[in-house]
Image (tube, rainbow, N blue to C red):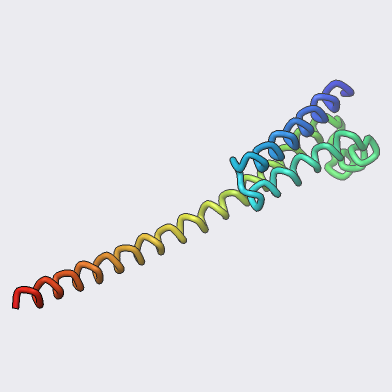
Length: 122
């Protein structure tokens, strides 16, 4: 059990470092990194707090703390992935609206260009 908690601690510290380096190098935007930072901190806190882990294990009604850890980690990452899905859906909707606006502007520009050419011929 101790080894699993140690691995979880190392994993969460590496995740924190990886996200912070990615933000610093502008590979990920700050607003998207918040979910990952919160997830990494939650896993770090659970892996370092034996009392909290025991309480969560009892609350979940499982006999083994390893099952509680896997459940917590899975739940945390499901929440992060759900948030990312919401952001992706919003970006897709925004992209569709932007493409439609660009198409309208192109149509208007072509119409003006045709009118200008027709006026130049007359």
